[in-house]
Structures are given as structure tokens and as C-alpha cells.
Amino acid sequence: MKKLLALLLSAALLTGTALPALGAEEASADAKLAQVTQAVKERLDLDTSGYDEFRGESWQQELATVWQLDWSGEEGSLSVQALEDGTIVSYVRSDGEDGIAVWGESGSLPAFPQGDPEVAAAAAEAFLAKVLDPALETVRLEEPQGERLGADSYRFSGSILLHGIPSPLSYSVTVRATDNQVTRFSRDALATTCLGGVPGPETAVTAAQAGETLRGTLALRLEYVLPEADSTQAVLRYLPERGHEYYVDAKTGELVDLTALEEKMYQAGGGDAA
Image 1: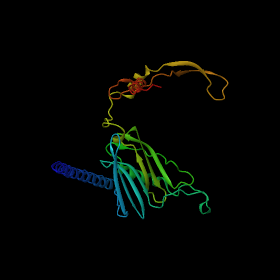
Image 2: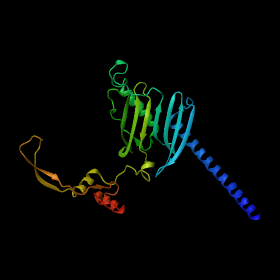
Image 3: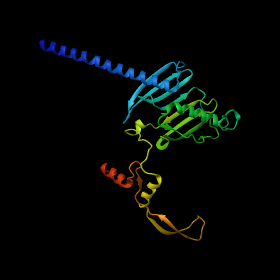
């Protein structure tokens, strides 16, 4: 009997200590959800009073936590993915007006978007101004893509500039032609793609100096080639030899063998260099 009583007491103690800890975790998650949701609303100037339901959850990527926020109701739905600091990485809005005209629908031929691409571009720029970091990130809006028969929107995409310099980060934003509302947005974020911050745009070497450094890595060969596809007379040309790729570190001026670095990476990972 004493042994059974001791076991029951131990179980009670374990249950009593575990439940408050679990409750604290849930409270912390709810607080973080509320914090991220509020940051998203403020950044996008969102009014979600027209939606009836809300759901939020998170998952851990390799480098950052991503929060999924979903609103829905009779008027449509809104889905936002954001990081814990409120950075918007994805935005999808649907309110029943989205869709693509189909050839033959209502007996009419498909047409180009019934809107003004310049007004759509202004709407895209206004949205991007809300979701990009003004101290670091900018974009140069190009001509809209997807301006095709049957489309109902304008899509803008390109590279995100860091300190005005092109980067591997990309973005895409879609504007509905009928009312110039942004219906889709996605982007690459620094926090989910790399570690550390972004170095300043100042360089220690000029482009001319970097060119001089790279010149020594370029080997040429003399070869007969046909200048045009239908040419019958060959000409002599100097062509670059295939070999290692190099770059010059803009901060230090160091010449770096990119091909050698890739080979070391493959070897460290147990793979074979191509």
C-alpha cells in the first residue's frame, strides 16, 4: 500500500509540474502570435474587421521562424507569411473578383488586362514601400510581365537592391487590373537565406583596379571561326580559354578563385566536383 501511495504521489507531482510548464509555453506562443499579427497589420495598414475567422501558426525554417496568418470570411480570404520581426515574405489576397478570363466566355475573345499599367506600377511601388526595409532595400520596377491575352492582372518582378546594389534576393508582386489592388506578393528575405548582416556599400578598390587584377587570370587562344551562321569565310579571333572563375573582393582587393572554393566545398561534403 505504501508503495502504491508513493507511486500515486509521484505521478501527481509530475503532472502538477508539467501542466504549468505546458501552459506557459502556450501563453508564450499566443503572445508571440499576437505580437507578429500586430506588426503585420501595422506594416500593411490592414483592416481585418471584414473577416470572420483567423488562424495563426508558425514553423521553424533552417535559419528563421516563419508565421502563417490566415483570415477568411464571406468577402474572401487573406494569407500572410511573416518573420518574427514583422517582415512580410508572402501575401495572397482573394475576394471573389480574382480570375482569368477564358476564351469564349460570354461569347467574347480574350483581351489584354483592362487597366493602366502605369497606375498598376504605382500601386506596386506603394505596396513595396510598406514591405521593404527603407534603410536597406529598394527595387527598380521594370515593365510588367504576363501582360497577355486573357490575363486580368499585371505582374512585376525582379531583384531586390541592397544599398542600391543588385543582390540574389528576388521579389514578385501582382496587381489586379480592375481596381489596382495587390493580390499577390512574395520575396526572398535575408533572415531565411543567409547568416549575418549586409556589409556597407563602401569599397576599398575601384572597378578599374579590380579589372586589372582579373586581367592576369584571363588566357586567350587564337582560333578560326565563322562570324555568322551562314558564313563561308572563316576569320581569326582571340577567344577566352575555359578555366577557373575568379572574383575580386571589393573590400580587400583580394583575388579569389571561385572554382577552387567550390571544389573544396564538394570535397568537404563528400561529393565530386563537376
